[in-house]
Length: 331
Image 1 (cartoon, rainbow, N blue to C red):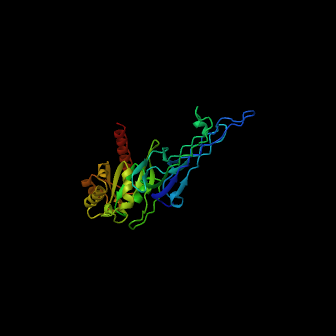
Image 2 (cartoon, helix red, strand yellow):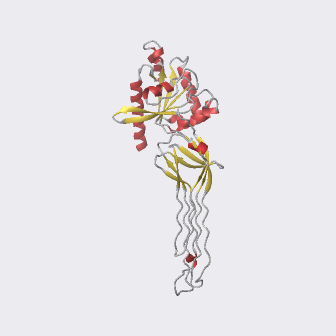
Image 3 (cartoon, rainbow, N blue to C red):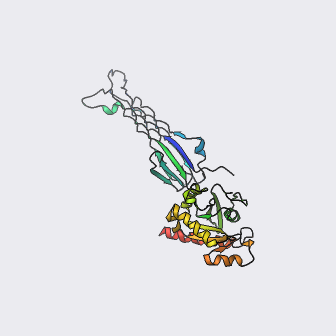
């Protein structure tokens, strides 16, 4: 499994503008030609491009300095210097950008293909031809180029998914994701097997799909930073709907659901405004019909990733909920 990184601090430096030129025409039989110094070229900008093929900020763990090319100097015959080439940096969807010093949110890069200017290239300086006037026929003045912007940026990735699986460690989230999608998360019978978010694409047929996210298990106190709480709770914020996954063998499924809701509410009250589905996992571990009995008071769906019980209904329910959300968003 590839490494995952969801935070990085980088330095971006746009190119300085090129200097304007001081030059005079050199024409045969014209010993004192007029000014013909050209302007400097524009410095290259640093741009962030949202690339759907990128999934982590791992590239920025090794490379932290990004410089665009400066503009070329102007020259005679009013020739403008060459513009510096822009530097394009590819980031995954869901990358938020803050000023590393002030913490100010500068951009929230979600939509694939979006291009955002992180540092603007400097404008080229004016050549001496620009300063010619009736009272100054031979100006020897030219401007230096304007410096490009320089910033230190804090990047933070919040994965973009249609539905997020929320539950305690070892509740069966990873097994469920593996059963309904092509994702292959690490699965074992001990807590905190999942140490990073995992995305899987679930097919609904007729070329319809949705993206399901397995979020590392929460524990009581996660909103206060216990366990892996602060590291992964923020990934829930991007999902359209929440899927609470509770072990059917829990001593008190209702209490487990209440605890999960409490942790989400403490992190961000808006999370509980999202549509939700509650599932009781590992239904195969109880006698036939008993899982459904335990699920009924919670309005939950009993499923078994091991046997496939309830998985078709799970896919259909999530698909219908997402369709309803998209209709709401479109109005």
